[in-house]
Each structure stands twice: as C-alpha cells, then as structure tokens.
Length: 256
Image (cartoon, rainbow, N blue to C red; front, side, top):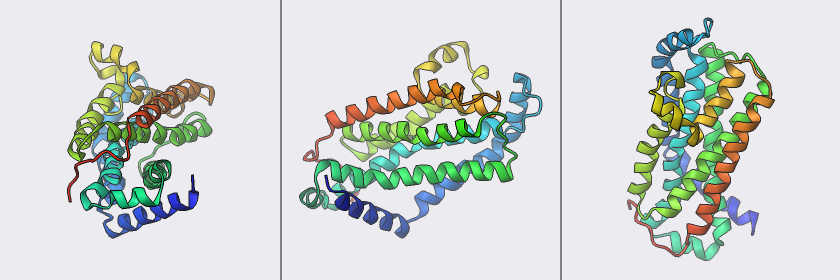
C-alpha cells in the first residue's frame, strides 16, 4: 500500500469539497439549527427524568452528534459512487490499489466527521450552555470513537449497494430509525416499552449511553468503556463486511 497515492486521492476529494461546500455547510449547520429548536422541549424532558438543572443541551448536542454522524453514510456513498457516474472509476483503479483507493476516499469523510463533532460540541458549550458533569476525557473518547462506527457502517452499505439511491435510502431512513431507537432524538425513557427493549441492539443506543453517562450522570472514564467497546465491535463487523463484499471491478450506478 502506498500512502502517497491514498493522500493524492484524498487531496482530490478535498478539492471537490471546496468546489461545492454546500454539503459540508449543511452537515455542520443543520444540527445546530435543530438543537436550537429542540433544546427547550428537551430541557423539560430531562427535568421529568430527574435532571432538574439541565438546559436541554445535554440531550440535544450528543443526540445531534450521533444522528448526523450516521447521516455520513450518504457521504461515504457519494465519494465511492461519484467516479462511477463520471466514468473515472476505472482510471482510478489503474492508478491505485483497492486499499489505497478506499483509504483515500474515506479519509476526507473522517475529517468531515470530526469537524462536525468539533463544531457541535464547541458551539454547544459556548452558545447552548452544555456542561459535562463527568469526565471530559470520557467525553473526548466517545467523540473519537463514534465516527469509526458510522463510517464503517457507511462503507458496508456502499459495498453492498448497487446504486447511490440505495445508499441514500439507508442513510436517510435508516439513520432516523437508528437515532429514534437509540434515544438520540428524544430521551430513551420517553420511548414505548418495546422500543426501550430493542434499543440495546442498535449502535446509537450505546453512543448515547456513553455520552449521557459523562454529560448528565457525572460518571468517569470507566462508564464509557463498555459503550466504546460495543461501538468498536460494531465498526469492526461493518469493516469486515465491507472488505468481503466490496469489489473494485463491480459497476455501480450513480448520477453523472
């Protein structure tokens, strides 16, 4: 594997992102707009839960971080399918191996994921009154691990899908379902009983459990170890599925 070739592909993807920054602006700005709408209602929900001094940002900021992290599934699909629509995929295959190609394509998405999280938590802290009662290190570890789960899931979806439309359906509808079941949109205790029982089966539940343990419950690093382990296990499973299913020579359908 040549890191030089992977970085060359990544630089090209960043140039494309600069040329059309609207998707990045949307991914960074829309979560903050939604936080502004949801924060008052979530403050009441957290008050009922027993967090009498909560501002609502304690649920809204990590909730939007988890939700929009999984919306990046569509972004993974875009960078992997776009060259098929342009007719440049075979040329890229001739210049780089499969691992080099995938690495170069995914690195910019990882950068977007961390930029998204940084903006959310920075603005959440300075503008929405977010305060972590527990370990800041634990909070940082959760933020570091979360994109591994969402981007690996995106790679698995893109490897299995034949069209970009299929990827977008999973990215949009699938993310709403995962976010809802995981307690990212509203606190878990407000969900129906059946949803609360199903919730531990989805990665978003574990992401929210980790964030809430340090932000709301005042826990230390030990409280996030299990959620981090589950998220990393989910990421490893998705990465393995993507590696088995992805075929560089397989034709994909995209918008030209």
